[in-house]
Length: 154
Image (cartoon, rainbow, N blue to C red; front, side, top):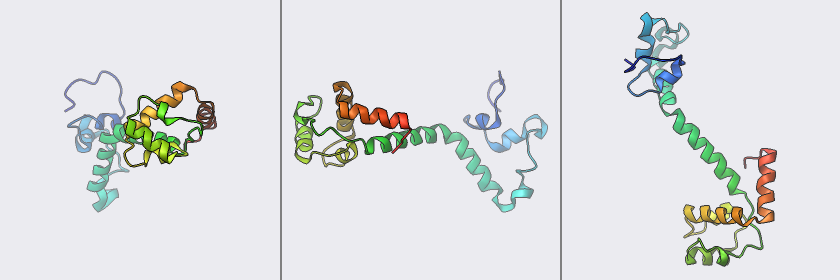
């Protein structure tokens, strides 16, 4: 069922993450020794198929879900990250001329505001962030370090 011999111990959730491995098949392994009386058709009634489906989905997609959560946390952190008032956008050579002009015109206060300006792409925001980190802008670096040290996510 698993395609190859199991070389070391795995919990059932990890086994369920594998392609073509389902809950029913896992519960039938080793003569049904893994099945639990707490999760059975008798205890769940009509909910059993949907609960099992949700467990399978959670297992199969847990890696993607965890990655998305991390991206959301990073985005929330950068959303409120204040941009230095002294920043001369025209000097950020990695940005397109159009992006530099728009940022200089609007003078966003935060990276989140910059990301919502029409014509400013996610790539432009990333390039701006790299410029700020490499440029050692004191206000920018201090804010980022303070937030990380304090464990502030947003």
